[in-house]
Structure formats: structure tokens, C-alpha cells
Image (tube, rainbow over all chains, first blue to last red; front, side, top):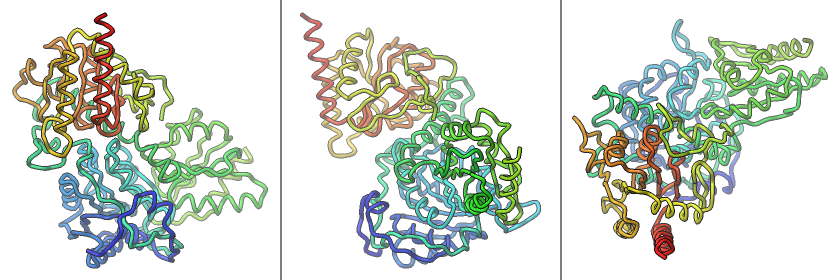
Length: 381
Length: 194
């Protein structure tokens, strides 16, 4: 193993002098994993994720990771990752698009087993028809898996979120998996300035003895819920236990809020919150919105921006409060179903002010002009 | 998160009570504790636990595997301190050595399980129970079931961050907190005896 100094998360995240690098999102993943003190990484290729786990394999060869291998397919990878986490090691993987759906059964299993796995999702279109192009549709499916969900706007977010996700996931009162989502190609294959902590520093090891469930140790029976699961019995007592178990997974996500606040500076970032028109977005739709807001400003239109960094837990109260003051709320999205629009409508008191547009999908880009058009339309109403 | 006034009170609360965390109850910071959903000082919570133990007609301790197995340094001393507390307070003990659902059925007179704790509480008419050394997930699963279906007052002494679903919960519990609780029980018993 390569020699690295173990430092506190606070030292690594906030105190260590960072170096600016001009790198892709995939390379930002590599840099984050260098400092994450990961025990095991398991890979399976799928565009646009393949490069990131390839690069993680490279740093395994350099001695940054104890174990690394390629699984048979995404379901096998996510199952293997579960086994590693159950055994009490820190584990990382990544996938995207159809790979996410192929592995889908494992995501609620991770949550239900209280496994602090960190997985990066490099989003792309899913089948019907087949595409490898950017699209965030898979995130709609992930919203109710019990996983925490962070959405990166750019390479810097991706680096910080992946690294900090380990600390959030492993808090004893949280201890559920974290998915860090980045828009495929737009982030993964685009070079950007990213400030990186020194690679000779790493996080402290994961301590499975503080986990809310026993690690899979044959001297500590039973290992998690895998033995005598509730499905083996059909009676009210078993149903009540299962219900209480599910509630506890949701409670764990609630407890993550304070850690997301302290490590990522909050579930949202807000600019010009008193504006009549508010754009609420996540991922690269935020960057497109920034461009649109600059254009609108040159036309004398005042528009605010809410960048959502955490989708699970969702910033319900903050969105409700911010939307209450706005005349209109515009939600630009890179998918056809408008899952963020649905989430925002669930949070706000007056859904009639929420505009679910523009939406692009199937690999289309989102010209800022589309957002400006919506801003003008709302301003003239 | 909901900014509610949800209180974690003695049940039976109903068919399926919510997780207190989902109702806006937050875990205490270091040096603090939870009493019925509100954050108080650790000292205040310890005093309240001592009162509740002594008021109870049929108090029980439910020690879990983190306390029952001598798996790391300091656990044996902690277990001894818990036994001293139980002896002084006059509580009975039902250990929870592991978390397996017992099939076809448990013997509720001598067993407790996080998946059906209400059976043990109903059978023994337990009106006060104290969890210690139970892994956090399993404690929370059990505490909600107890609150939903029984009138048992619940305490969770946690070595980590605490439990919103207990009526009273201490966090970071070690020998010092156990000694303070035992001292509080002794003091109140002395007052009660005069």
C-alpha cells in the first residue's frame, strides 16, 4: 500500500491546502478515491461510467486501495459490494443508466441492511430506445430506495460529494448508502478546474464496531437480517417489525441533514432568493440556469436560483419557504418525466406557480435560451 | 424536516406510530440528552431516568449483545456497573443476546427480541424498560413497536448518538454516566426512604 497520512475529515475537507487541477469528472472520482481510504472497489463497465472505475483500478495498482476486481455484471457488482460492506469494510463502486436499473434490486437491499456504501451514478439514458447519451431519468427510480442522493453540478461537486459521502454514510446514526449522481458526459467527460486535497492524506478507516447493526462476523450472531428474515413468517408481529424497520431507514435519512449541512454547506445553495422568479434545479441544469439568469439580467429581469445538492433527504421546508415568496418557480430538467418538478410540487403550498419546463432528454443539450424563454413568459404573465 | 411539536410519550400510541426522527425530533449533541422528544441537559435526563425507575411498578433492563459479550476493552466494567444499577434500583433483567426472531414462538417470560418486544412486555406487565448495549438499528425498531402497542416507559442508554424513539435517551454512555445514574437512584431512594 502507498504511504498516506491519516487525517481527520475536517482537516482533509477544510484545512488542507488544495491544488487546482484541470480534470474530467471521471478523474475527479479518481482523486476523491485516492483520499477516501477505500478498502475495496468493484467495477463493471458501462458508458459513461467506465472510465471512472478504470481510473480507480489504476490507483488500486498504485496501492491506494486494498482490493479491486471486476464483477460479472452490475447486479453481481452491487451484490458483491453489499457483501463487502456487511463484512465491515469501506467499499466504492460506480455505474449508470441501464447498469443502474440492472442492479436495481440491490439498492433498497443496501439501505435496508444499513450498509454505508458509496456509489457514483454517471447518469445516461435508459432503454427504449437504447441510448448512451446524457439523461437523468434513472434518478426518478432511485428516489424511493432509501439511499441518500447527492447531485453534482460539476467536477468540483463530484470530488467533494464522493469524498464526504463516506463520512456521512458511516455516521452511526445515519449508516445508509449514499448515491452521488453526476450527469454523464456533461460532467464525466468535461474538463473543469477542480481543487484537490493532497493525495498523501486520507480519511480515517471505517469503524464497523460503531455500526447500528452487527458486522457479518461469525462470532456475532446473527449477521444482519439475512438469517430468519421477516418474509419467513406471516403474522401481524412480523409485519409490524418490518414496518418499524422501514421507518428506521427513513429516519436515518432525516438524521443525515445535519451532516450534509456541516460538510456540504447545506442541502441547497440559494442566490437572489427574494426575486419574483425562482429557478430550482439540480446537476448540470444548475449551470445552464446560471447562464440563463445572466442573459435575463441583461434584459432587466431579476431571477433567483436554488441549487439542490441533496435530493434524499429532500430540502422540503427550505423549498416551501423559498417558493412561498416567489411569483413563479421554473424547474429545468434533463429528463422527460420531470421528477424534480414532482418533488418540488410535493413541497410547495401553491403548485400552480410551478413551471415544469424546459425539459430535454435523449441526449439533447439544454440551451440557456430555453430557460430564458420560460423566464420571459413568467415575467409577462 | 418537519418543525413539529411531536412528543415521544408513553403508549399505546396506535397501530403504526411514526419514527420520531421523521416527525422533527432531532438527536442531542454531546453533553445533551432527549426527554420525550425535547433536548435537555444530560444531568436533567439522568435525574428523570432515576425518578422513572423508582416510580415504576415492574421495571426491567434489556441489555443487548454490545454489553453481554466481552468483545472489547471496557465492556466488562460497563456490564458490572449496569448490574449494580439493576440491583440498587430493584429492576429485573431480560437479556437480548442476539436479534434472531425466535420461531415458532418466543418464551416471553424469559426472552426479549427487537422484532416482537411487545410480547415480552405484555406477558410480564412491564411498565418501565431500559435498553443498553443494543445495536442502534434494532433498538429503534423495538422502541417504536413498544410505543405503538404498550404502555411501557422506554429508556435507551446509547454508546453512540442516542435514540429519538425512546422516551428518554442518553448518548455516549460510558462508566461516568452509569455512575451518575446509579448515584441519582441511590440519592432518590434515600430521600424516598426518609
